[in-house]
Image (cartoon, rainbow, N blue to C red; front, side):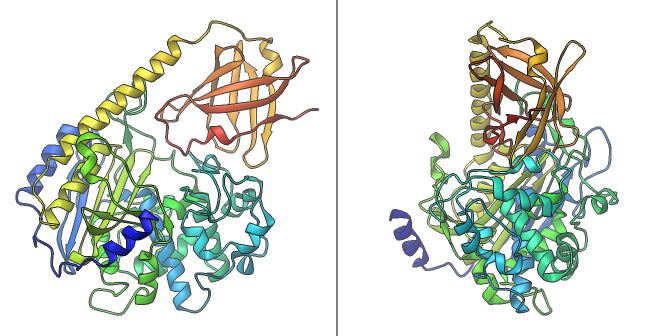
Length: 524
């Protein structure tokens, strides 16, 4: 009830007709470069739009560590889940053309679509696909495309029927990506174009965003692109220096509607203008109707409020909700519409202050969360006329403390590991194990040890090293991936009855949803 009251209270606030400041902060270009160097981020680009005008669109640093090519306003960066709003915009154009409605039943457009529960199948609407209230658990199904996949988009959607819900339908919030995969398939079913082609032609190019790409082949053909980087050589992800990642280790192509765009600062500025103008294109026509724009920002699913500790507490909102591809909340009593994004080796953020007619976007070609969050709040404070607060330094301390805590927790667990087991000869653990929604995981003997292959994710394989009892740890050959603890559960006769997994790192991203696997041996 408190959230609903807060929504009413904030909606009743009198909006400021103009931002407190009408230009980027003084010395901002120099400050970003200083922060970038201190953070270790190879490159960053930022777009700022005020009153329909681009007041900043530029880059800092390099596209690829160790090379000289500079980031500029037209360098494209992976933008992760900020792309969900583009999938929504694509659907909006179909709503405007009368080809579907937000509250149409998905099954009416895709008769083969199935959820685990037949009643949910019958009731699931287009809007339900977009607002994280389906009853699926956090990140359910993400291993079907994280880190990559050999499944088509339709095959991925067909696996949904095997993923059991965590809660009842429309009862609460849990972030997912897989229903945006469904939304992408729906666009193809309704329009006759693939999601990639429709978003490119009918959203990006139609909206005047000419640098951006919607598929990997086109991205790799762009010389002016940022390469992914991450800290993968230390005790835990985020520890150690940044290294260049293999850009072909991307999110599965099947999941591009959930976060597969690559965009430049110049194009992000154009997108901010379109959003702040409720679908109107600068100087000409519309990309989507004002009615569709209003639907995009309308809060639907209440979310738990962030609860940052200590110095970060002033950033905590009084209300938070998910709309159509956007998160809607207050920041110190002001309406904020935003979304973050992250894929391997790159992070992004797009923010709108509609009542101040200001928007900005930040893209980074590494996983520097403190830099992104710090600049986010620094710009919010500036455009809301609030006193300067050194948010980058405070977020840096928080992220460092979290990393040290994760390293300590991992070390403690490893120290307490019992030198017991395994119970069976290694050959007894070999076999093919199947999960209904994921597919097969194969364990074989190789070079005197065990080897694991996650067959749905190409090149996701490596050694299985004994950990304790009948639990082994993966040593995946790709160091950019999160390892798993793999526990073989035995029946009373000493045979493997099932296999359970969990991420080895306490800080692993939720998309490594090993915990959701329930693998059973395939008997001959």
